View 1 (cartoon, one colour):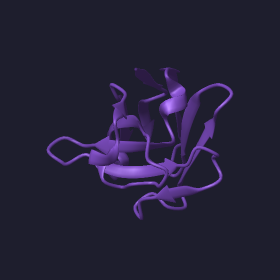
View 2: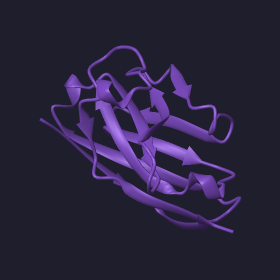
View 3: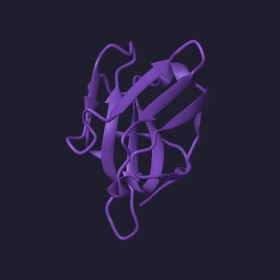
Length: 124
């Protein structure tokens, strides 16, 4: 079993930066690709970013490309999401996720492990 715990969310102003962390524990060797999804009230959960096990290959949603950076520290079993130039539309609950797939799926149904989420609120 794998446990994922997010942290780092909060209330920020538009244009600010925030870094989310996700600590993985348990059978972390079973995780290959890790990623972040987000869900705003009344909306579907959407893909934000993903990174392969090596950390060398990443994928981003068009809406965050150039502003967000995903990374992972396998020695610490921790996933990160650096969010810069935050916009009002970035407000959502952000979920850390992991899959045993070797590619970087943008469909949430490919992901097996999920954290409880951390709230990010961007105000004007």
